Length: 579
Image (cartoon, rainbow, N blue to C red; front, side, top):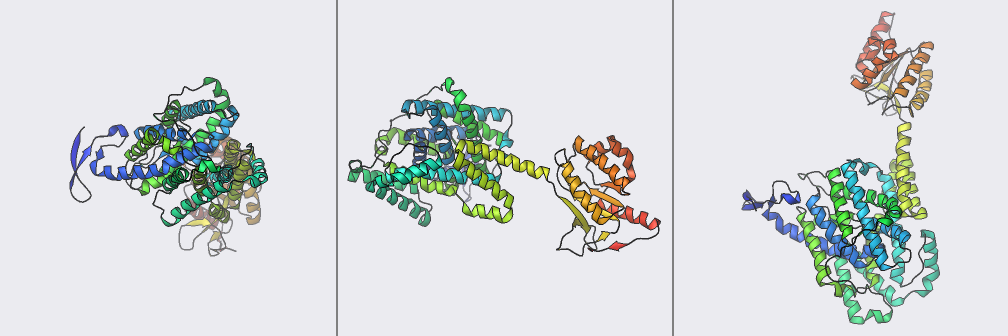
């Protein structure tokens, strides 16, 4: 390997080792190795137990979680662009996977579930790779933040309800959220006291450690104590269910079943969207100054290949996890080598620790899932959205209700539809502001009660629409302008286009018609501060001929000066304040 010398953080010479295969640019600095090793092992202490727990959320054997913490993690380390991103499975992906698997393997046959899960992961990977080829990284913006808040809260609630029966040691046939809630209430008398005690103890350990020693690997401690208690007190003999047999060794090859694609592809599309959305959000959230910014299309490729290859080796759908990425970053990860260390720890668990892991109580895994799913529910975030914009709070509630009442996969559709409707609503309802000039300056701003001193010129109405003007909102803009014109009675209406990036053909025709109606009322239309593209469209239309150069003005100050000059030439000028 090629090396060269560099001055380290303490002033000592260090060596830089070429590792361009990991996408680390000029090379890997030797003094990064220790923090990467520490971070990788620390993250593994969180990822390994959680991956096993999330596999049970999807209705899969725990070893599938370990397979997913190994193969996609390695692939991402090679192809990804985010240095701290930790890729395995997540709470959201697990619940979405479980919902989809229940459709194609309703009997819960282990072999059928494994094949279906591998096929689903492979299909998700292919979709992400295709999205990368088509450069669709923009889909990361398809779900707005309020809608994502509602969606995740709904998913968190669904996951918690799904895991509570394992804490109580009861069983019932799973259905929708409300059906499960009713069944849980009916089965409460069948609660296993010993299982409940184990579950409460695990919850107390996890919550206590998160509160008082947040840097400690709480899931690993809970799992270790759960295994120790199971072996020491023979908990199985007291009715406490354990994980059971875990196959020892490398992940087995699993060929995807092509006949399942017709049933799986709609769910795979939703999972692919959530996988990428979560991954790119986590990658951006934990990037630090001086690091390369995550590249959306390259992230699509990395997570896509990770899912496709992971599926071929019996994994479930994977993506970047926020909580485990946070652990990785806090533990000092400098590069994606930390991810390789985490993957190696998952592999070591498979090869050497499988018999020990089989003693783990199911209640322990349920406690891990519940504690780390509660974080998806953020009442404070709902409150913040409500304080800022009531409408977007309603969008968040709609996404939440979609997940809880319709299920997670349909909830994704609801979330996307709500986001798109919200976008369409905002685009179709642009604001139009009446402008005034700050006294003693050439600054023009929307008139408001906070600035009653702002100046206006009698006979000249200055307005500013914001956003692209097109067929869906042009009528709405006209409806806002008409009462403003009637109230002010101006001789000239000057529309400031500085905040309008584009005007569509249908909207331009409406503007032409509006200019004619204004002229019939004795009001002249001036257009101000058009960008070159919009100016070109206007000049190529009949409106350009009607307005001529004298009514297409460079900026608002020019418009005011032009109006005052013309008014003075006609015999006088009046300047009015806010009134």
